Picture 1 (cartoon, rainbow, N blue to C red):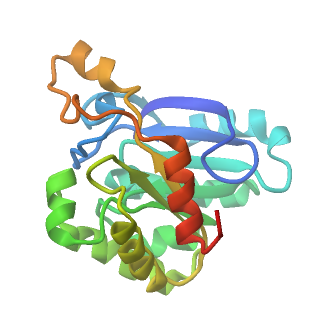
Picture 2 (picture 1 turned 30 degrees about the horizontal axis):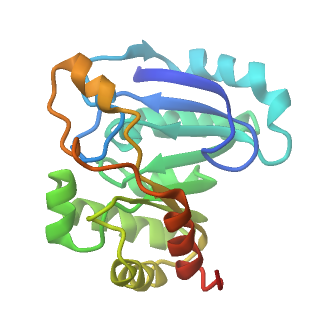
Length: 235
């Protein structure tokens, strides 16, 4: 059984094509800019088995076309690696494309999981261990272990990185980020995402202090300039 927070049936931004997005419950990181604190607790969420989920996926399979499929996001799906392997194995039997949206912060047999994964959306929190810990509270070595397995697997990768004013928005940061990404093979796409404050109300409702309450949302045009910079596009 897996713990699922919620399901989006017609997702358009979490991988190619039209996708069913499964938001897994549970996350060990505490990213300062997280907008889904309601996904942190692994004990919460709805218990579902693979058969139940496959039934939902097959209902929407006609919409997937040649590029769509299922994306497992979170939370952090890798905290439920065994269930994820079981689900992706069944998806392959049903000819459903599989995408893993992850920060790489979990446990389990990454090698087996990546055998059944068509695409990884890899959320790079930071490339410097000390800054990674400051931003997320996590251990950078855990990310490195996943990345090692990802490199060996040859699985196609889309890189995602959140641009936060005063934290990750300088040109120097972007240059060093680009250097870090250059050491990762099979990267097909890089997306810089502007920080937003849409999750702030969730913190208030849950009685949790919002870490970046004094930070304004990232300007989308400035984010676009940095995006062009990392892709070597003249703006």
